[in-house]
Image (cartoon, rainbow, N blue to C red; front, side):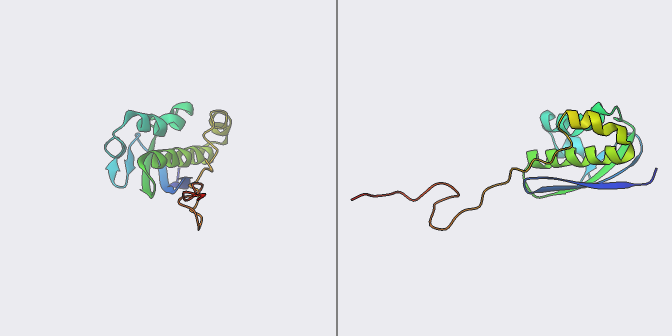
Length: 128
């Protein structure tokens, strides 16, 4: 199996991954993923597609993640891993899609508008 590279995004986080056969080593920006994501919830999010496809411990994943916060980065990585698994075996697409892992979350921060304090909040109005 040659190296497969895919991309995943969430808010402003971008995860580029390189997947090849191995013994389950996941590195994020040159560090182990458990060191980069110390919270167990984020580790669970990252392992979700591997557990569903029963490929945990069979693939080495090297990632470059930039932008966003820690939760957005974890979810971007989850999408990238899901896409890579579908390239490896198209049969994985059905169970991953059923769990909602093949969909990019489109929610982004709304821009600030001129003449307003924030995106939706207005400046205080004084009647008199």
